[in-house]
Amino acid sequence: MNTSKFEEKLLLLKLKKRDPEAFTQIYDLYVTPIYRFIYFKVATRQDAEDMTSEVFLKIWQYINDSDTEIENLKAFLYRTARNLVIDSYRKKAKQDITQDSEVLSNIEDERQQNFLTEIETGFEMKNIELVLRKLKDDYREVIILRYIEELTITEISKVLDKSKGSVRVILHRALKVIRELIKQDGQRNS
Image 1 (cartoon, rainbow, N blue to C red):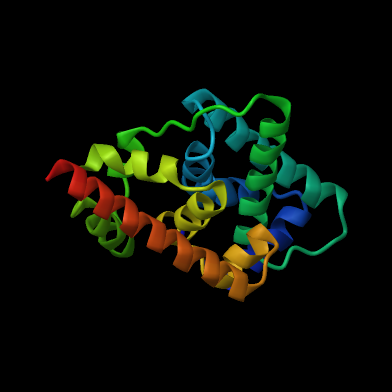
Image 2: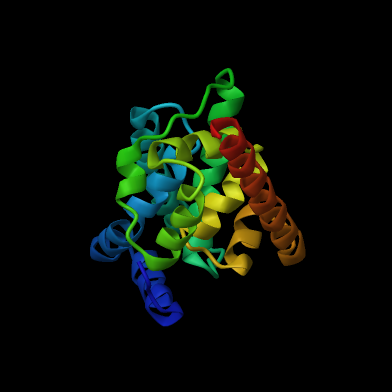
């Protein structure tokens, strides 16, 4: 999923000319991370699959119908996904978020593994979803974007429409809450 800004701009130019191959490349690059991002925020796998498809449909429509230039494709994709999730929350009663350990076990990147290892010191792998579930939506979202999806602070600020400083503060507070949850659970299990 690591594409350079130049490659991203080239794909966007090709896509603007309605090149289906460019859309396929964008889809292939981003479908798994966008799905994973949505999956951590919705109740079912089916909802995540449907919304992921809808994200790419909306991107295709936006690029074909708009003259506005997209500066950061990755941030634009995540923002579109986030907006779809928010819209679904407005349409449905708020549901519990469920995660599948399969999604977590597919995470291979070193930074992600380091983050998961830190959590695992106080919890078993199956309990990571419980930690995420206990976080406020803002905290959970920032943790997922930063450590699971590996977005930069700048990209997260664009996705959330917040300043970089605000994102850093939310991230710091979320990590502090996670550490407290791990500590509390460790004391309960002692």
